[in-house]
Image 1 (cartoon, protein in one colour):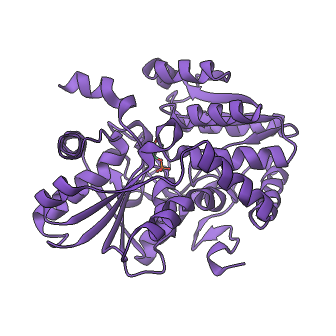
Image 2 (image 1 turned 45 degrees about the vertical axis):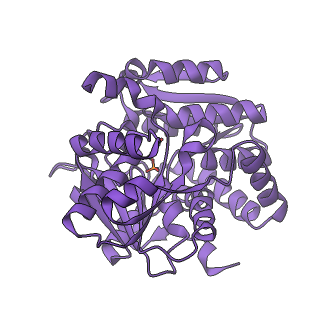
Length: 381
Ligand SMILES: *Cc1c(COP(=O)(O)O)cnc(C)c1O
């Protein structure tokens, strides 16, 4: 076993497993099953095969020639927007769905905010013939009707959550609650590097394919490796391929959902991390134009990287993000997701200010494509 895949339940003081007693055995089962599977070449080969023949991996590394020339840098785009279902989320759900099957589970449970993770889970469920139940806040259901219809088209059941702010954080709470009652036949397919151990570690391992591929696709170690951070899975997977290099790792948060940059230590959804909260520990609501970054917490590994300085975390506001979508579209012919555009916007600003010096090489993960955001952009046009 390589040191890079050492099992661990904590990232410094962050992570852990703060769940009701009734969920401990379920988390332990997932941990045991994943540890075995991840060391089993048969499982690894099967996942690699599905990622290749079904999900479209490896995704290309595209030199962004015209934007590079404008910014005075060499920009390389890791194209998760070209993966099946339009984002990196498929890497994680296919891994977890195969694991669930191996554990003898017949059903997948998932939470979703904007619906991307729900659609990805419904996709994996359909592919492997597993029933899929997705918990989604009532407010998100109203705002994301197209994704609700996608999930139902794929055969999934979508259950509205009417508690709290009726958004993602309530859907997470409800999915965990439901898992307690259904653990015999169900696997909880969590959507990012969050939740109780082993999820932050397991999801990072399923997403490290982004970073490992990119590492083999670059001809030299880039000066900067940049990715947007919601829960932090596309960034964690990207960073995993470059942790042992001199590349500067930059995680870009939404200004209104900056748990690393503006949060404080707390416990949310079963793990210790940095959280947006008030003085009484009441969880604050995150606000971002990018639905995937609209979460008040962040994966524990990022909280840890921020505290050690292994990665740096920065924020970008909605206005710059929208401008970045248009700039990338017009220079490269790629309409990226609003989430991914946070990374692009940071680079545009940092190149202009000289923070990223002329001539630098930048690897930037485009976590997803922007089709889902067209209605939002049309309203602003
Ligand atoms: C869900 C999503 C994100 C945020 O999730 P992470 O776990 O931070 O990667 C980012 N980009 C896209 C396109 C997404 O769908």
